[in-house]
Amino acid sequence: MKNLNKVHLSGLRAVEAVGRLGSLKEAASELGVTIGAVSQQLQKTERQLGRTLFERRPGGLRKTPLGEEIVRRLTVAMTELSAAVDLADTDRNDTLTVSIPPVLAEKWLVKRLSGFHRQNSHIRVRLDASVTLIDPNRSDVDLCIRVGRGEWSGVRLEKLIDQCVFPVCSPGLAKNLTHPADLADYPIITDPDGMFEWDAWLGPNGLSTGVLGDGPVFTNASLCIDAAIAGLGIFLAWEPAVTDALEAGQLVTPFPDRYPTDFAYWIVEAEHPSANAGVAAFKRWLKDALPKPPTRY
Image (cartoon, rainbow, N blue to C red; front, side, top):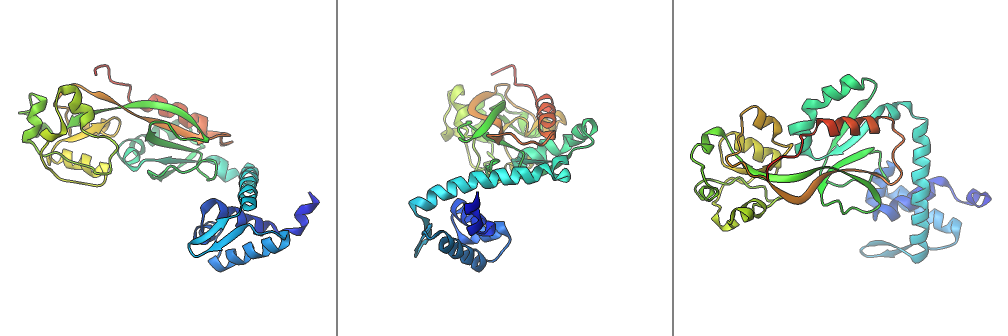
């Protein structure tokens, strides 16, 4: 490893960060330095190696073929270095970082975390509420919970529950809903950024989305659920986002049928699982706490 003596580690970190993140700005943010400092580190490392790793173009930096290979290997090495440092970080191993969709965190998980803490008082849970799939191979996130088809590559996946959809509304609105076609007479609450479309529920009932009327629009599923509780319309919901509201009688399901989608909640972990001892405990608790699949479709 004597060849490492001619290159500074800080320079290799800069090369890896720029190559992985794709820009000087994002690399500077991750490394906690200025953009100018990252640029200088790149130039210095290229001089030390005697080779060009990045082409300078008007649209930004682009890796050369050699740079591509070096960055790939550096990312593997930096990931291992990060894991090695984590082994000596007692606080890190006592803190479990979970990345989770905001609606699941707000409407279901937060209210139940005390149950996990009663069983695992030595583990502190840090929630990162986000819909972005954070790469657990390259971050401090121990595990992610995501909704999708399970098509993510380079990670370890474990299905939690399949996603079934069904209409929900306030008890007052449900009084005159006797047939799915009655939805045409009520406002429909819409999340334009949502994953689930009404045709997943209407289709099996012999209806199309054309039957639906207008209604309030919220670009946030949690707000849509709150709007349904407030009686503003009918929302196409799923478990466990509305579990508590249904149990409390704030929402009802005017029709009994729930229909599956091709989505599910998944646990997403790094290819090489985290050494954090709390991961296994949290996964066991989560599986026990989640609502069981419906018995009727």
